Every structure is written in structure tokens, then in C-alpha cells.
Length: 382
Image (tube, rainbow, N blue to C red):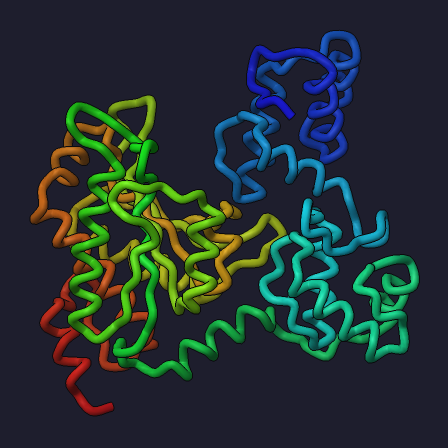
């Protein structure tokens, strides 16, 4: 589909308005207008932004592929259509999310509920069908939906997938040695990201990634960088790299931009959906990173947010994306251009990772834990 934005018109826009009305984000008079004009007006833009915010999408008021897919998916409920794993075009939707949640409640591990019918969902569904005497074809049709609705959950009190994440961190122990971390400097190659004056996002985050890599390796961690200095993989390729490497954590580094030169600060993002699902460990790590960077750098605290961006959704391990400073803000830009400032940022991220694995044991106040402290902790007996 074509990208739709304010000012566009036609049957594509009428479809968007109809879907938004079905989600109670547009009033009926707006839908009546759509039948006559099909305009992408201010009402539609506001409704799209509201939907995007609820769903953890980029809140730009523009209907691109991700927003359109999410709008289409929001119209489905479990049982409204057959579900199956298709390699060429994976099925997305709220009905898939409901299926994943239900399988998890019944004790079948289909991975992170993300609304995408992938191979892990199919595997969990086949196991369920086999256990309950159904045809184990990996397709969720009427008979499977009936069986899913008739059975009582085996798991209560929390989201088992994310509780497993927490348990994996606990079992990994407090030491950093041996932990495998993928550091993902954003953009690269022909994609330079934000460019203002002589500051180029792809180069800044590449340098930051190298500084963070060096500190992590000094602690005994296995730090892997997702790209080289001259190439720019897609988000799915970056996620695949982390998955194939068996990463314990995934850290994506970016700088931000805004049409207003006054916008400034740091924000951290983790996987989370509009249905309330969130990566427990991802959220915890994002919080540690956010607090450390705010305390150490003096950047404005733009908070921690849940998103469904591909880079967060497609990684199997806990993942965060850090937007460090606005290059469109002169003060933020001057800070990020300073190598000494990037050293401070790298130390803050490393300390945040250490805090995650300490789980509150032998910790120190935010902003006071140093790289030397981390090294001493690595040598101490637990």
C-alpha cells in the first residue's frame, strides 16, 4: 500500500477511516464524511496518532506499512479467521496475540506474545493439538479455538514468558563474564541517520558502540557489534544477527531528531504491546539505563517507553533502544560530538547492565557506580 498522510484522499483513506471508526477512534459523522470525500484530515491524523501511541508504534500520524498492518490486525479476534504459519507472508493480528497468550496460559511455550504467527507459535500449537487429540496440523481453526476456550489455564499470576526471562537473568548470576551482548549502532552505510551541521548519527553511535564494546570486553563479556562502519543492515537483519548469536541482551544505539530545535533529552525503549504485554527484563534494563544516563549526563529525562518496533519485537532476547540526545538541539549535539561525553554514556550503559545482573545485591546509588567498581565486582567472591 502507499503511505498515507494528512491531505491525502481516495478509497485507501476511506478504508483507514473505516478501520479507525471500528476501533471507536473516529465518530460516525467522520465516517459519513469519508464516504463522500475520503479525506485524510486533522481528525484522521489525531485518530492515527492515538492508535499508534496505544500500540507502541512511531507516533507520527502517518499510515505506513507498520501502522496499516497493526490497524488491520486490530480488527481480528480469535476465531474470526483460520490461522497458520506462512513463511512468505506471516499472519499478524490481535487474534494471533490472543492465541499466543492462551497457549502460554495452558503451559505451551510459543515464545514472546507479539501478534505474529511464527514457527514457535506453530510448534506450540502443534503440541497443544497433539496433547488434546486434535489433528496436529499447526492450523488454528474452529475445532482448535473451541478446545482452547474450554480448557482451564495451567498458569496463573503473571505472564509466564516474561517470568521465564526474569528467571534466566537470576540463573545467569551476577558476574558479567561470559554474558553475550549485541551492541547495535543504528543506521550505517548509505543511511546516515540524523545529519545536522557536521554531526552524523551513524558515525556518532558507531564510535559509542566501540567504546562500549571495549569496556564490556574488559569485564569478560562477549560483546558483538551488529554492523561494520560502512554497512547498514535492516532491522530484521540486526535482530536475526542477535538471535543467531544467542545473545543475552540487545542494545540499540541512536540519536534523536525533532522539528523543534528546543526538543532535547534521552529516552529508552523496550518491547511492549498495546495489549499490556511487556518484556519484564527489557523494561527493567531500560529503566536502569535511563536513570544512569540522566544522572551522569544531565540530559533531560524523556522517560522509558514500550514500543512494538521490529528491532524490539523480533529479537528473542531482552532488547532496548536508547535515543541519546537530539542532534537537532545545539546543546545535545555539542555533547554527543564530544568523545569524553560518549565515554560517560558508555560507562552508564555498562553500569546499567551490571545492575541488571546484580538484581539489587551489592549495588550502589544511581550515578555513583563506576567502571572501576564494576571491575572490582567481577573479581569479588559472591
